[in-house]
Amino acid sequence: MASEIKKIGVFTSGGDSPGMNAAIRSVVRTCAYLGIECVGIYRGYQGMMEGDFKTLDARSVNNIINKGGTILKSARCEEFRTKEGRKKAYDQLTKEGIDAFVVIGGNGSFTGALLFNEEYKFPVMGIPGTIDNDILGSSYTIGFDTAINTVVDAIDKIRDTASSHNRLFFVEVMGRDVGHIALNAGVGAGAEEILIPEQNLGLERLLDSLKRSKASGKSSSIVIVAEGDKIGKNVFELKEYVEEHLPIYDVRVSVLGHMQRGGNPTCFDRVLASRMGVKAVESILEGKSNLMVGIKDTKLVLTPLAEAIKAHTEIDEELIRVSDIMTT
Ligand code: ATP
Image (cartoon, rainbow, N blue to C red; front, side, top):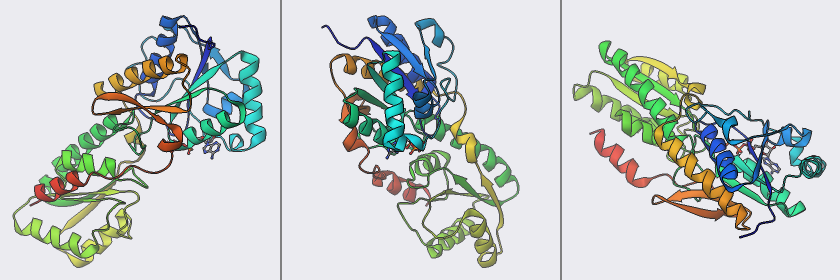
């Protein structure tokens, strides 16, 4: 099958996530395998506008599959939101002879790619790279599995100290709009309560649950709080509230923060990224565009970018029920 596409650009954009390097490696090696030139675009859309490009061959991505972060760097770029900014990017891509690009990022990055395609008919393909797992069209995004394992590991350690001192810990995890990290890591780490943006459990239920927990003889309690939880109080205010209403508890707070974005990707994320990179390049060469590679029921699927960016994913109701039963 002859394709017009001879040179593909690849870049990472938005927040970084573990496994992005594995995806870059996969795109680069698939291009090499198929005899296509591959160009790394540094610092997302910012680097694209500035022509910050470097040709990548198969050997240039040695020893990165196991590394967190992104060798191409990531950036947020306001100027790309403007027509003038996108024109600059187009001029640079044309000058370099790049015929299509693969963007590894989240909803914002895909929105930019879609607009760019509308304006210049430039072939674009998306790979979902974000720890939040909040992209329609894929059951898993690259980085999510690593992030929940990082959180579970941290909570296991916090529980050691919590149970030695009979303490209650509020642990804040990432998730401004979605609670996938909180819910999955919470179930995995055996949290007593999980507060997520999709559900407002209310302060009364939290107090009841903590009272029951104490009465049942539990030696420690862990409550996971997603950043965007709707209970109306942040972790520090929750600590004060519980101390005031349940003085039996010695309460501590731990905010996990950016450690959740880092670390070596899990095997799951490395394999997922490798599969998605191959699919992205092959799809471009088949003449496809404006699509995102995703995974559903263990199979890779393509979803129009326009669909993928439409809304957030739904929280897993079955997992919420499991969590409720496990905290009995
Ligand atoms: P994350 O899930 O980590 O936030 P993201 O891809 O959603 O990743 P954003 O900061 O929303 O991250 O977007 C990354 C970049 O994509 C922006 O800095 C901007 O350059 C571009 N972008 C986002 N939205 C648009 C838009 N509406 N039009 C053009 N470009 C956009």
